[in-house]
Length: 213
Length: 213
DNA sequence: ACAACAAGTCACCAAACAGTGACTTAATAA
DNA sequence: TTATTAAGTCACTGTTTGGTGACTTGTTGT
Image (cartoon, rainbow over all chains, first blue to last red; front, side, top):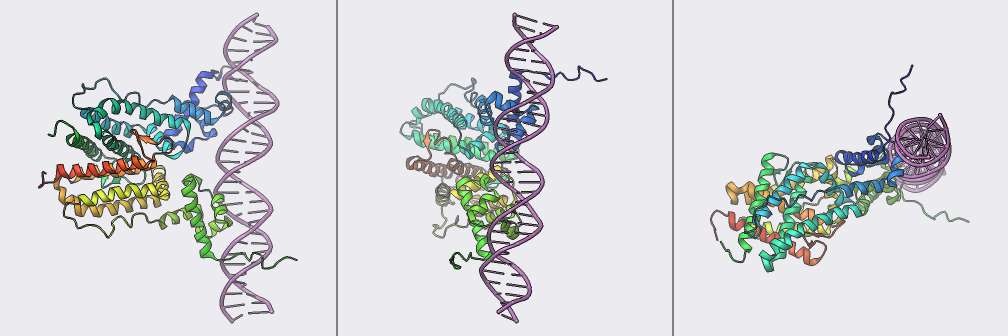
């Protein structure tokens, strides 16, 4: 007395592949890259691990394909940017604050950044290089011309601010405060954003060739 | 015809315990915290893993004891500090640049910082809290009074600069350049140090109550 | 000298994990 | 309908890892 139409187990290679990729993302967000074991991935996807070897060649290739599918930096240069008449000051402020918020709200990106600090891997290098390329468009075309000989000084300052914005978002694992600022509260995060804007402003005030303000 | 004095296998509990602690440090520096497996630790120490359970109760306790033995921040307030007459500006510059160099030259500290971003663990929290406590002495006593109402703004700026200095030292795993600055070369690192000093200087110029310079 | 204790070793077990061969069964096209 | 192909399952092997009981042997106090 068993229904023969109980669960006709769907058979769809593409969909299954996607299920594996989704499973990788889910595990990454929750447990981090160290939790990406074959058995766990298969269990999370609800499919047999054998298929991972069939479809991707192995866990490493699956993971690489997952990483390759990511696209964090495509929206870094939003369309609604005001025209550049200030050497990129407004853009720099906006970009920094947005990046800070974006990383803070995106667990997946946080885990990828941490992974990139922890493991050498081609596909992770690609993520980092891609970000570099996106940033370079802004730096080379907008701020470098404005700062002239001081261009690399400005780049170093931006490197510090961007990486600081990253680190402060990765930081609150064991302790929430950094220099006494609670980086998990709205107040603390606002303080940091204000500081980002202030620092950019100061760099522009100081180093702009014409406007000594 | 065997020498009975071949290798009389030393027996010394304290020395063996130290060998285990040293092994943890060695593995941490080379492979990172993920490489801290019982068998590897025992092999590196040249002793049987059973002793780890005997002496420490387990790997976790061994690792905790190792972390507890660390002392990275005791020398943050060096004796040769000039007297504070500038609201701590010179001190802030010096501390930041020294921290940047210190982290860059200390693989062990780098691994501990990364570990602290990756895993929740009491003993790691202690390391972070200790650093916070050290920093708080300087911030509360020197810079807070100087900046008055803008104190937390300055703290946020320092948080960004310190964490930026950390991140840039952890960064070059997959890619060496950040914002186009090669953080592995003397030139790039000097540029970053100059930027650190410049940013501190600007914050002091802008926010010092009396000297509008 | 030697009893007693603790340092240290070794063999062994159990669980977690990666990987594969042989099978079952759904979809499809002749 | 049925032969073929490929999606998917399952049971199994082998390896790595954590952990422990039973043993051997150096050290120490008397």
